[in-house]
Image (cartoon, rainbow, N blue to C red):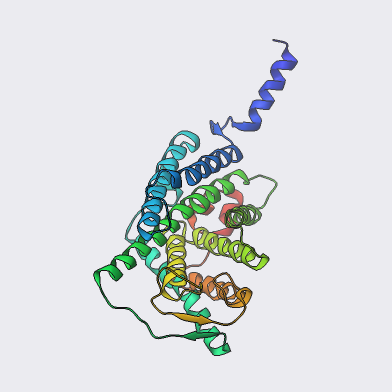
Length: 313
């Protein structure tokens, strides 16, 4: 082969392959991972019987998605990233579990505070709980917990555990400051999360984008997935089933009558979006209480080249 042709193919290969790390480059890893995840997400509903929208089917589907996503993450970590899967925010300890519980409180507080403001503003009326603690009702509660927790686990594994971790490494360029790298990777993760949840309105789209930013903040500061999983699950459970603002929810612990516009009082409305700011402050306060410091987690900053990693610790 002519030397020029050989050099051309060598450089072409280097666009996709990191010689120093002996693995595909971050963009290739993330792209391949997301393609496989999308294939799983689109295929699984056709494999779960019976069809329909029952809570049992939905819970079964979500559990299968979590199992498949964990398998995909393990395979990607082993063969693409060439690292242990626990390095993607899955170092499960008591602290990881306490982060998840604290996150559930922070996430669940967002819709409760939004409902409170809606009541004060006259847009929302709270009805009397109309349920009996039967075995059927408790079964529904159990199923919706499985659904919301499974959704949170699967999406956080993808968008924070894999995408954000690899984006930090891929954007860690010598010509960029460490803080710039983190902000860029954080933005990429939030943007992809927002695109995966395309809403019917601009306000809904901005809500999901800001939610992705909030969850990314929890991951960057804690260094583990426990906190963002808890926030995600807590918000979904409370906003979807405890104080749901949908017109016909499958389960409502506290029924609501909503008269305000959806862009303001809805589940993806401006009120709930606004309460993501105090939720971010709650994340900072919790981590300061737990660790005595507020800043990028050492596990995250260690991924940056040393010159700038030391400055943001």
